[in-house]
Amino acid sequence: MRIFREPARLQKWARRQKLAGRKIALVPTMGYLHEGHLSLIETARAKGADEIVVSVFVNPVQFCPGEDYEKYPRDEKADLAKCRAAGATAVFFPTPANMYLDRHSVYVEEDDLSKGLCGARRPGHFRGVCTVVAKLFNLAHPDFAVFGQKDYQQAQVIRRMVRDLNFDLQIVVAPIVREPSGLARSSRNTYLSESEREKALAISRGLFALKGEAAKAPGGLPARSSLARLAKSLSRAGLEVDYVECVDAETLEPSSRVCKGSCVLVAAYDGRTRLIDNVLV
Ligand code: PAF
Image (tube, rainbow, N blue to C red):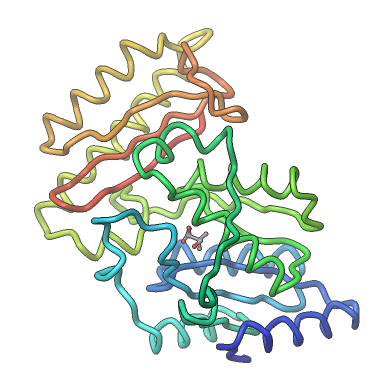
């Protein structure tokens, strides 16, 4: 497994692979890898990639002031071992200084899908995500890139960026990986105490229950009352709801019904930890 730290080195190597006709997959991550990330690597392999490049970079520009950039968990040694065991062929570990050169001044901004949901609560977040992902695409020359459905809005925003800026690659979205309890896997779960972990289960339970009910009701359920009930169950469990929304799964516009083709998304604070989850109905 190759380890790159310099963007130019990765780019040169990737260009050579591409010229040799090898199929490159990119798996962008912020590290502290868990089974969710490993499933993205697995998806890349199953889709026939010859080279699987995992990038590990806690991207400063996608964190808002006061967020957890400094304390975001990092463990380079463990990440390397996990990438190797999962079958990655290259790992990219850049530093903020070599990704963002002095007076870096060009950013990528998606102006539609990133307006609501997390975009509304985390100003500048998707601008940071799009910018770093565009840079990673230019460095790794992937034929396809794999993202997780847990960050549903992110995946849609990146698809739109690829379409609108004519990136010559495919976006693959892999299903959410959950702990046996139902809790969506996330590097941030490491912040949770035992009691917070217990509280967090209300999110996946609530989402699954709503999805189940909506599937049984012909034409689905009215969104307003269903979301209010879901929000109430989260508050009762001791979570602080950031948002509970039902949107059209493609356009991310609010949907008046929880029905086929919609996506229900939750963001909630469990203590100081912000958790997100979603279900496609
Ligand atoms: O989903 C993430 O971990 C990050 O937002 C990504 C896509 C790696 C960009 O920094």
